[in-house]
Image 1 (tube, rainbow, N blue to C red):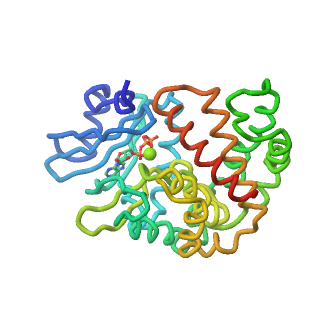
Image 2: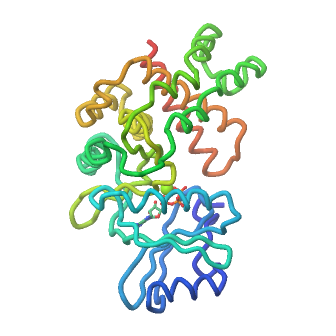
Image 3: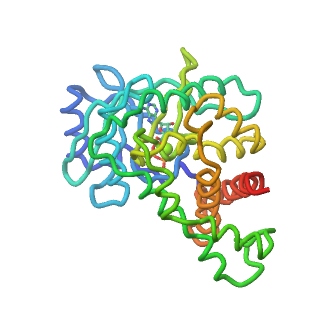
Amino acid sequence: MSAASVRVRWEDLPREVREAVQMRLGGRVVDVVHPEGGFTRGLAARVTYAGGEVFLKASPVAARTASHHRAEAMVGRFLPVAIAPEFLWSLVTAGWIVNAFEAVRGREPDLRPGSTDLTGVLDAVGALERELTPCPVPGAGEVGETLSTLAGHWGRLAAEPPGSVGHGTWTASQRARLEELDDAERLSELSAGDTLVHCDLRADNMLSEFDTGRTRILDWSWGARGAAWVDAAFFVPQLILAGHTPAGAETVLAGRVPGWRAVASEAADAFAVALTGYWTWHHTHGPGGALGAYRGRAAEAGRMWVDYRLA
Ligand SMILES: Nc1ncnc2c1ncn2[C@@H]1O[C@H](COP(=O)(O)OP(=O)(O)OP(=O)(O)O)[C@@H](O)[C@H]1O
Ligand SMILES: [Mg+2]
């Protein structure tokens, strides 16, 4: 099954929902394009109607993904359009939540070393701290809460029989060190701050615009208030996944994100260890398919990062 096939399509929405959307748009939908990829079941679709184009994301209010859509609607109205597609409206009808955004014309950026997309991507990552401090979203959750849920997986992995996948090539004493660094409470304290952080910076949550080369950042469902270094830290393993060395990835981000330049080693170490533990655990114990495969690759990148940081 391809990653794309898990998604709901426009024609799968109940008629009442399609009617309500068309009422809100003020015109009939004449064309719908569903993007490839993604790990979420909800609708994601570029919709053309008499008045122009919008990008719709939707899910049943009873589904787990609805909390993402509610969060995106809460955060979306406070995001500058230079950073993210403009948030247009949200409606809840017939058991569905539907969010509408500006439809951006662009493609997923290529993060590989030497890619011409990198300048635009790094400009966008650099703009986050500048544009989103102080945190513009009233009542945003604290990023420490999100990061605490990433931490704690090394303890679980340690309880598994020796030789299991999660243990990888690390020695028992290295694993003991990971467990010690993997401290949810400490990570939560170290990540406190007053920037709106995205918490899911990946190439597939970015669009490199065809006409300007500018990068816009999508999918703000994990947006939270915290230290600006957190988004740079989330992005390091993504750059490693794309072929950068850990040192190269850290350096390129330090050139753009002041908060990352100033981050305490203890904070970056704790973050790298927690995120890698999370991926490792979920790769071996979570669902397979495209998501499981991604987590396996991400765990590998995380492992390279942790080896570099703790060397
Ligand atoms: N405003 C937009 N304009 C154009 N394309 C968009 C827009 N928002 C999202 N997309 C496209 O839809 C895809 C899925 O969007 P997004 O990442 O927001 O969805 P999701 O359902 O939350 O998540 P997941 O990343 O888990 O699949 C993006 O990778 C992008 O290709
Ligand atoms: Mg996404």
